[in-house]
Image 1 (cartoon, one colour):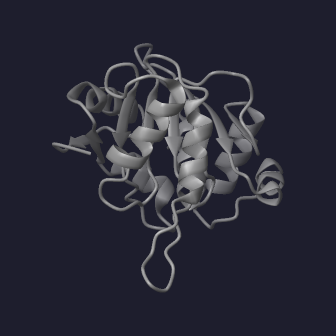
Image 2: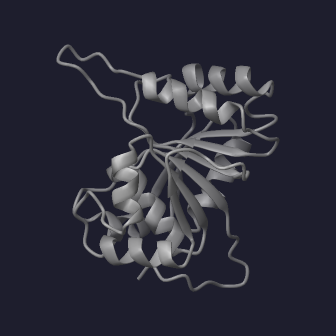
Image 3: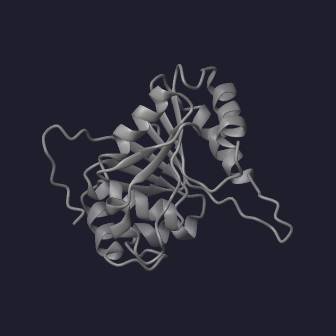
Amino acid sequence: SLEPVFNMLFYLFNIIFYGLGFVGLTVSVALASRGHFVTGIDINPKLVDQLVSGVPHVHERRLPEMLRRTLKDQQLTISTQPSTNHHRVVLIAVGTPVDDEGNVSLKALQSTCEVISSRLKRGDLVMLRSTVPVGTTRGLVRALLENGSNMKAGEDFHLSFTPERTVEGQAMDELISLPQIVGGLTPRCCERAVHFWQTLTDTAVTVESL
């Protein structure tokens, strides 16, 4: 059960999650149900209105009740744009559609990173969860975040890739039972991401690179 019951050593995070598709919504609700304070962002106003009313757009067992409960308890806030509040943990799960010729559109990812870069502070943890071509986090995402923040990834802020692994229809169970795979720009980045995901699932599997 994803009830907000914790050991006193359990550290709660202030999280902002960009993209509320299947991945973004299920993970946001799961984290909020653990007691974290989550702000979910999506640029689709109709979707935001639907979610704020407590009606998910994906079919997952227990998700409707969990969504309504976390909204009521103010563990989860959903909006079309971030507030002025600062969030130490940033998760990205925006869409990266592929056309008929296999070309991936990274436009949403680029615009999201530009927004994030203007809000970054030293010590923040940024984790990419969107499905992207190999090298995207190390190249595009890192460059956008560094250029917009005037900070250096791996030194001033932490950067990690943590792929989604859940099967549609079983997400709310698998998010807490499956090991989370974590790759970081540096060992310290990886360590910070592992510490975060262990508040949701017991096991994290680290890999040698992003």
